[in-house]
Amino acid sequence: MGFATHAGFMARLHSLGVRPTVIGGSSAGAIAAGLYASGLPQEVIRKTVLAHGFRRSFVRRTPWLTHYIRSSFFESNVGAFKTDGAIAYLEKVMGKHEIESLTAPRFMAAVSNLETCRTHFITRGPLAQIMVASCCIPTIFAPIPYEGMQCFDGGVAHEAPIDPWLEDEDIDVIVMHRVTHTESPPPRMFPFNLFHLASKAHECASEQLQEYRMRLAALHGKKIIATRTVHSRPAAFSGKEMPNYYAAGEAQAQRLYDTQLKDLL
Image (cartoon, rainbow, N blue to C red; front, side, top):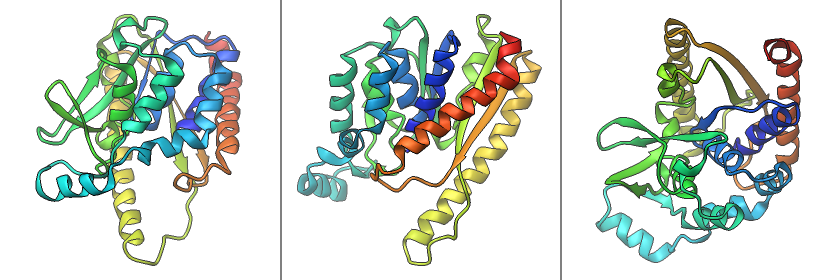
């Protein structure tokens, strides 16, 4: 649910004249980055990420009975919801773009192939489909097929998918924006306390991998500017706080620009 925060962050940088050569992300980051790369006006992006209809689109086209039967007897890669509605929603907003047609900036999204235990960095193919594929959290959303793969959330192993950029000669500086949440008491009831524990385990792995990637970037001579927006954890499909999250991203971008980017640019 971090796409509003990411979108606000990029909108403020855009208003300050920052123009990336390439933009990318995993999960919510892929949504915000894809909307930006598609060339939409920032106000249209803002309305999209704040819209209740967009959040609802991730479950709206789930064929409950047939999906349950297929997931029980015929599918090995399963998820509670299908995301066909989200793809259709984004295509209506953006139009049908191929990723390779985007040049200002270029776009990249990470997806996870759990059958081969590998992450793939996608730079070709249908934009909306790949954006949503990068959001397919295992067990929550059914994977999206693409080029023989069953694509799940790229954030499984690459929350901030910068690896391909480390050997890209056109890239000198990488700005990394992460969204994390303020600590709150864990839920007491099962299975929500189980989900919370799984989330904390993922966070632990992400922090450790992040540290290794920062070291690797330095070895490749890339300058990494990492920043983080912290706010309360979004409630599933609730939009009451979404404008505040968008504003938090804007404020963090302004701080980053004032303290680091302005002098660098």
